[in-house]
Amino acid sequence: NLGGTSNLTAANETIGNSGTGTFTHSGGTNAISNGLFIGNNGGSSGTYSLSGTGTVSAADVYVGRWGTGSFAQTSGINTVSNRLYLGTYSGASGTYDLSGSSDVSANIFYFGNAGTGEFNQSGTSTATTNELWLGYYSGGNASYNLSESGSLSATDETIGRDGFGTFTQTGGTNTITNDLNMGLNSGSSGTYTISGGTLDVTGSIVNGLGDSTLNNNGGTLNVGGTMDVDT
Image (cartoon, rainbow, N blue to C red):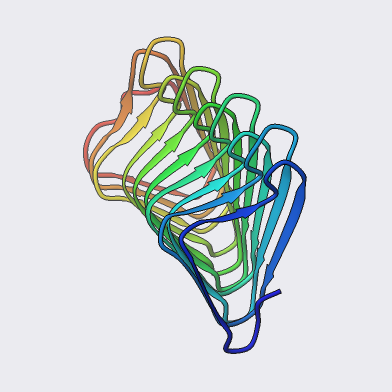
C-alpha cells in the first residue's frame, strides 16, 4: 500500500509474477524507470488500484503480460512514456478501468496485442496517446468502451490490425488528429459503434483489407476527410 506523500522508486515492478499480487496506491509517487508488469507469467494474477492523489510513471506497462492483469484507476495520474499493453501475449488477459477524474497517457496503446484486452473509460477521465491499436496481432482481441464524459485523444487509431477490435461509444469525446483505420490487414475485423457522444476525425475513416463496420446509432460524427466503411 502506497499513500500519503510517500515515494517509491524502482527499475522494475512486478505485481503477480507466478502467483497473485495486489498494489494499492492512494497517494504519493511510484516512479518506475523501466517496466511495470501486472500478471507477469502464465497462471499469475495481478491488480493495481490507483486512486486519490497517486501518481505512477513507467517506461512500459504490461497489464496481463502472460497472465491476468487488472488496472483500476478512479483518480490520479498514470504516465507511460512508451507503451501501455493490455493482454500482451497469447493467452494473456488485461483489463483497464479508467473512471472519475483520472488521467492516463502513453506513446502507444496496445490493447489485445496478442491476447485479450479491455479498456473501459467513464466519468470525466482523459486518455491520451499517439497511437491506439485494438487487436494488433492475429489472435489479439480488444474492446474499448467510452461512456459518460470521458475524453480520448489520439493521433491515429486502428480498430483491428491483424486481430479483432471493437470500439463502443455511448458518450464522451473521441478526437483523432489523423485517420481512423478499421480492419487494416486481411483477416482482421474492426467495428465502431457510436450511440452517444462525439467522434471527431480530422482525417478519414479508412476501410482496410479486412472487415470493417461503422454503426452510427446516434451521437455526433465529424469527419474531415472521406468515409470508406460499411455502415
